[in-house]
Image (cartoon, rainbow, N blue to C red; front, side):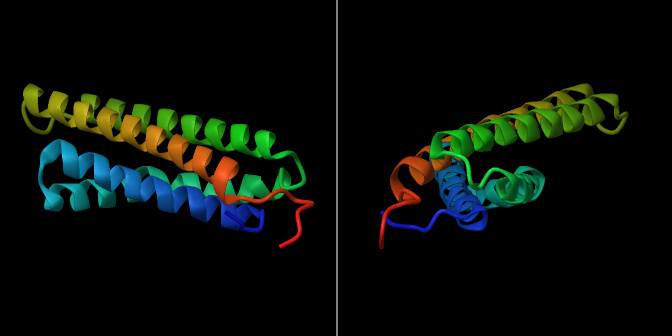
Length: 141
């Protein structure tokens, strides 16, 4: 395609593709559109909002680097944010005394699943954004 490379455009494109991928994944796996909408909302507030913020802010510092460098930076940010936040939420649920042990384990599994789906959807979004949607810096439009 032909989007102009800038940190906010790149972060927005990755975010849009990731949201669509997350929605599609949870809708197909649960065979329920309402579950897909609920999970994409939970995932967006839990993981995607912090990721988008870091993608845009750190993107300002790497905007003059190569496309491959920005792609790898995007993947690293996605991995760090999903890893740190999922570990934080999983340990908070594990330390909680609310609910039964089975309920806490189920909640931990849901958070882990959300983190995995989010990371892979963001990775697909980054691949599509950096290698298909974004034009080269020296290309004329």
